[in-house]
Image (tube, rainbow, N blue to C red; front, side, top):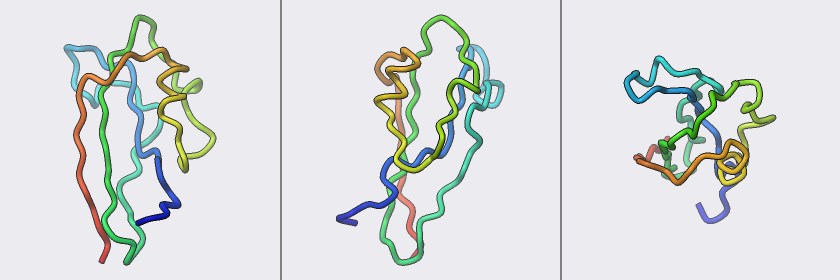
Length: 96
């Protein structure tokens, strides 16, 4: 919509994934919360981003935001010293 109330909703964070591991072998810092667009609110975009983690292992407790609503990705990337995204994907979901 024109006035998104839940822009930048955090759905999931997985950290400490070694390049030889599978995603499910990383540390889940924020549990997965699947798409649930409100009925009749139109299409919602969902984005997955993959970042290179520089050096140290991250602790889930230092990453968990107070809330999922209005998650500030730029602030998170800066706080955790991540570089630019290496890959991304997206999809749209709607609840007519």
